[in-house]
Image (cartoon, rainbow, N blue to C red; front, side, top):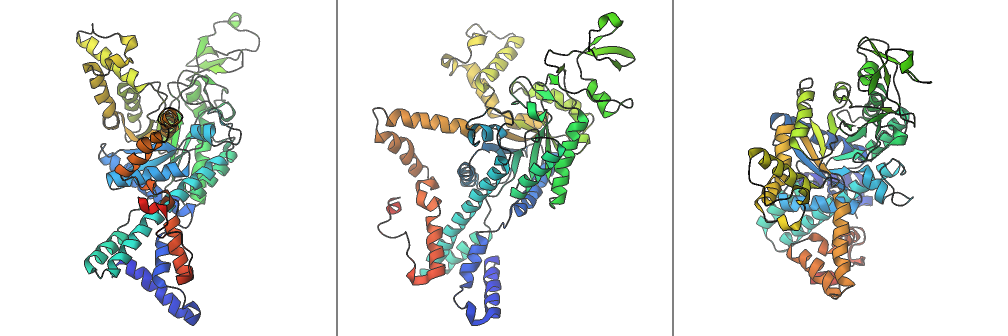
Length: 523
């Protein structure tokens, strides 16, 4: 007996147990509704996706070509369409995640309107968005299963036992659209207790993976901007512990924590921690302060702070705003103290640069794995063309046809250099996963840019000479020809599911939206 038939039988037994009062309940209809709502809570999702991510991490340790990917999203519909597209084009959702970007929450979801990525948006928006993303993914499950149920009904009506068996097999083998979300908690939106409370809300909404960064919460900056102020190791580890306790309290024992350290871009710190013993966390952190020697009292000004480091007196370099200059932060400490994955922010996508840092980390943490932002903040075209230019220059290749500072020009698009650079961009994720320890590749805000670009194209034509043709040729005709499910927008929004539910609840009396006059039939 198939699992589908077992589920029907279980409801039938329950109906029989409850007698004639349940005669109106159709066991198969109830079994279908249960199948369409497999995940009953966000915690169900968090536990399910945490297991997936842990298995993927293990797979990567065994084979670095088994890296994972995600795209950032700021609305449930975008997340839904992404995973429908992944299943359509790849046949599976395996190794495909979603990324919840704090940048896009700030820019697109705050009640204050568009904000910079500085933790000024409402922190409750983050768990609310996680819940929204999973609501849309669960609806994608319900819609696809609804089509399979209709296929089964059509096969039965036609008396086709083979087609019926195929339809049941597809129902039993259905792969959910629910995938892990790497969720950005910024710097925790406050102290460690505030971090714990927000982490709980995020996990309850479905997050199996929380990414937290080591900046001062109320001075937080985007990772690709200047002015980042880090916190001492013990402060950051307290927030990592807070996230772990939140996972454990809620029974998500294998939840994942990504520690983000802006290793190449963090040049400031606000706090000099007190060291009580040689080699403790405070002294490790203070070792990265930028200092100048103190040879006598003449080297000190009013209010200067003096530290003893390696037997020498030094004073930290302090700015007029009271912040101290900082050189680089040790990222190993986070992996030694509770984090599962590491996010290192770089100023350009350069495998050699990333790999050099990872090589140092892996001398201490052999299985260290990175989450890496394939960021739209990088000019990928220019960066890779310049990397190829520099490599060719080192090889002594003739570069007289190129001007390094102008390589972004469209005039170079069909040149050997540009084609070589594009090949390197194409293989960047596979190459860097193999050579630089990157387990998970994400793009933080791709759909911010895709929506802007597609809207610009549509508006240019629609409000210009093309009129309605701009939509028809540029959007709808493409939807039809590529088999995009969303062309039937009524179905995507749940119209067919609602009709079938009305059948379950009201039988022949149901007032349904489908029928010969429904314009969706044109598709």
